[in-house]
Image 1 (cartoon, helix red, strand yellow):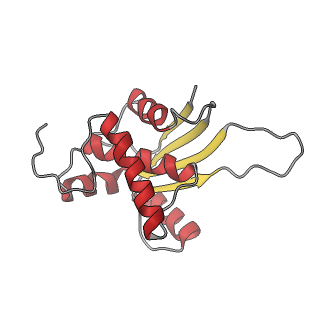
Image 2: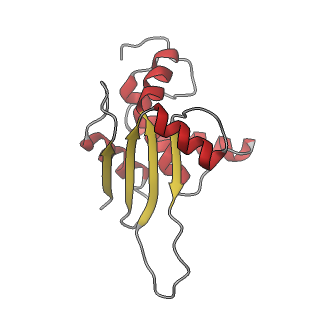
Length: 157
């Protein structure tokens, strides 16, 4: 079973409940074949901006930061910890509105995107980006969420 610790540093309208986070993690990790642990921390713009500057050397807040767990080089050490996701709730709300996407769908996409980063997926070059996006789209389809990379015209589904 995938264990999630959800840290709500910032409360905001439209945040998913714990069951939604669990569903998104479980569907993303379904083919992994082992139990995992991760932390999902929901923050405001100040904490996001600070972490983004410290770890990515980029100014301002960002939607999600992924911090994969790096196991110490100790013989026999085992851990199911994938890592931490830090999600900036105000940035997600703004993006969903700007992109005309349902907020909960955008949360699902960003959480899935972050978990894939914890698993080693990336989008630095075009081939990696295509592979990661295709994986995201396939997972979101299982949740009846449309392709997030297409323009959403109709807010009603």
